[in-house]
Length: 206
Image: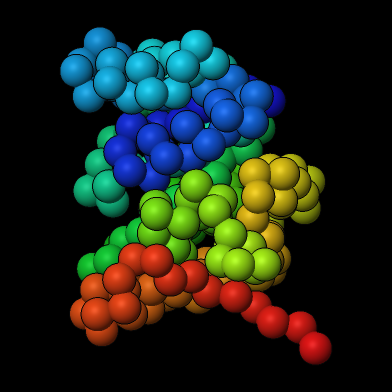
């Protein structure tokens, strides 16, 4: 599969390394494809990864992962389009309380700005340390996802499962605020409560 990744930070870089190790082709979309940080990342990910402009990464990907800081999200989306028909995985978190002009969740704002993209919220509710797909004993890390397009959600769920995680469908995009609240809880538990980043959420079934 061809995967465009907007951003080359901890989340984008970690998933990029994981996906190239699983024979996916990755193109990082960044503002400076020739910068030292990007060159170092490409050296780690190998020949299955390239770097290009934001718009080139969107055009390249069968799926596009949005993994930039919230402050940069709207500008990146506007630079990277057009988005028509693209499956867009929103891995961002808006940690500040929403303003009166904001949608109830970051994902709904992403869907508003990336017009005609098929937005699926995923990969936001755990730390990048868990995105190597390393299991916790016999348990895999759960990746919670939600979205309004059933086919797009199915594609993303398949990618999650084939990458070594357990996908958990949380319903429509209107539930994204619930998924995003898990990110805040994870950060509180990991850092404020002293558990460290090697923790993950698991939905148990009886």
